[in-house]
Image 1 (cartoon, rainbow, N blue to C red):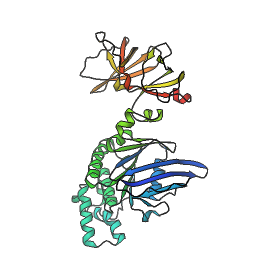
Image 2: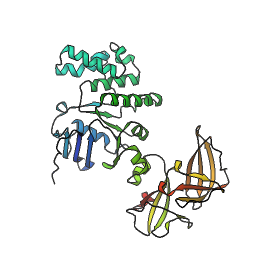
Image 3: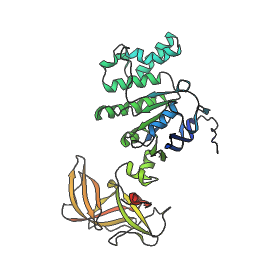
Image 4: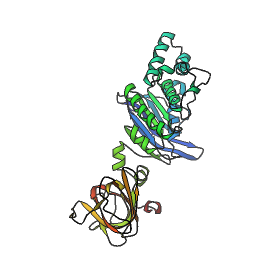
Length: 372
């Protein structure tokens, strides 16, 4: 069936409909369907080789999709070359012209379009002010820090007023402190300018901090699209749960009447049973921060699970403690506890661990990878 573009709406700036990409016989993208809302910050998140940069190149026009349609504000641009698409790209390498000043780097695209000098100066000044670089207008790019050079690249892209700004891992070359500062700057710039951002990254923290929504990629497929909270708390697949944040995983057997039966006979309550067949192997996931140490004075609530675990190690991490142990059925388990709370666990001793039933993730095991 041939995909057709949706009718233009004020809500959608970019749409990919049934996009596939092959290099020879090798599939790189498979059936990508993504709609990016006007003014949205959408992060494309995934490991190396997941197809996220190829997807960005297809939107920019640097690569041609094998099948499918790309629309910008309702117009089909699938066959248009890059210079006829109303998008601009910010790359990991700043790609600034070393022989030009900061001002001339930002003005370059406008000069190529023949924009009048008075309008050009106004727009370049506005772009430099937006990224807080007005005082560096006459400086050479090489005299700026990495973060400042990246802001020049962003200003150069935004000065052309694209419908969508494409950012291909633009902060990955920066050190940690500058990268975090630039994350805040990018968030501010996006809020100030209101342009739609499509942002490629392999850094889950970066995606969670910056994006309105996140599309998680794996092996050319889009596994899930949602807000950071949706993807973190309600992952659609085991891969998404593993890729976003940390998770304790246990293997058991789902019994519709008895819950999840572990190797030593321990039974865990669960509500997440949709799509799980009775008497099948399942992978049970619990985030470390959702687990607590229960005291003997507390009575077990009907909406929580309690297990016995041997505590092996307590690691001080500043504001928190990482407590490592082993369950009664032999699986490793970790939990987080704030350092301002009294530690109710000691290495070499057993402890009772508890978590709400609603905190559990449950996936049916389809292969050995899913079980581990």
